Image (tube, rainbow, N blue to C red; front, side):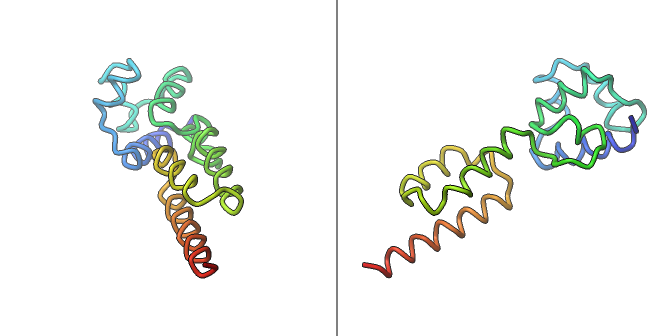
Length: 129
């Protein structure tokens, strides 16, 4: 594992999730000194700590290790894919409720896409009346 890539990706995921080192330490149980050495690129984490960090940051552990796969954890990708596929068949009010309940699981791009599609559907329904 490339410690520089892992360091870069931990930092990227921390920024994306707005997490501090303290958040990760508290939620993962990894000692602060160890996490600091991973973030600085001094050492690469052992596989068990990769999984702990990935779980806390809700990212794909394979992405965290430096592979070219989506950053998002599978659950997040699956939910986003599901709502986008059903946006034309689910009533807008129900989609609004689902969006409000699960928006924390979406990327910013997915949020923008879903809002755009919802607004487009609502305007289409208003024009039909």
